[in-house]
Image 1 (cartoon, rainbow, N blue to C red):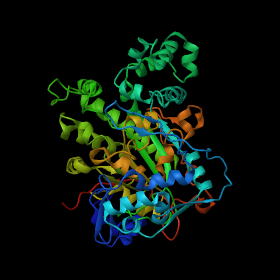
Image 2 (cartoon, rainbow, N blue to C red):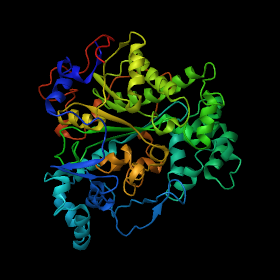
Image 3 (cartoon, rainbow, N blue to C red):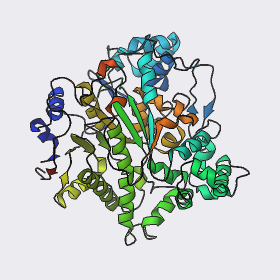
Length: 524
């Protein structure tokens, strides 16, 4: 059978499930608590840990961030928190540089001035930062960091040809234009052409409408395909984009610093469909619902399911390109983006789309782990609604997806962490958005990840993709594309883990078993 409750993983025939069950003698937390736990003390990352004590702040300084750059960019409005700019004294460029970067509590203390460190310790009621982050050291070479950055890729859907997407982000991801295009993300590209005297993207749209050779040069196969893209807003188009960033966590599930895992995690970020607030949300609701936002327009639930399937197809094909065999995912689009629409029906539609893909296509997964958060019970209802024949095992659980990915990577399995993010991350390169300045509700799962891992390497001004010049690193999947052979070599960044096997160590099988699996529900 392919469906597993968490209690079933101990007896699963996939060695990864037995392996991770052995790693943790205590249960995973049900969800991210955004807390550092050391002994009997807990520290709230959202409200107690200042940006100066977040580990990515140390990581950037170790890489050589330029402290003379004090300018900031804004991603929403003048009322929103500003995002600190990132600029290095010199770019990561030397693949032979084996000098070490160390992430540790002691190293973080040295970064602070004595007065600032004393002030921080007094507020946290500790004598040293080792009481917050523990005594371990995370160590990585600059060459490994460069290799990770070079492997970052962006995958797009059918309405965003790679050539056009590169041209698009070379405009909207510029520091001086991030705020403008973020504030106008609800405007269709076609409407932007009407104000081309004030809008650089509008000028590009107008040129494409008038020049068929330029249209072909930027990847549009027909005028109809181009028109379909221009009828959408930047926000709508963002739901066809995922950013794939191989990297490492600095911390364990209790936010205690750990040694570098034997294999990286593929951090995969994508934006869900916004039914929540703003003009774009109103436009999205009108596509599928009657004006009361409670009832689907006939046939539109099918349209929504197909759109969600396309998003997850892009995500799963990205996993396949990197040779991922044990991806973990948390719900995308099943939280704040639901707004006041009929939430249950949308959550059901998301699960139907995911399960239909896993039944129809073989992406090379052995086990797919899914925590749908608040949508967990709706998802179980979808599983009960019919007899599924998935091409891999599906572990449906309520554990911390990131901690699960860390456990798999620590045991040498090829894993990914699929998680939600927002428009500015996938379209404008603001990875982690407010990881440095966010507090309270502004410090979500995406911020928590970037604040405690190498995922900041996907940030504009660090990752060269956002300059619009790295054509080989943007890959467009069309709706008709089928699963192709995995390119595992892309995922491994140095000889230490260059094996072509899906797993390393005494883990047994390589890749999933042949054939399909018949769904059987067991347990509550």
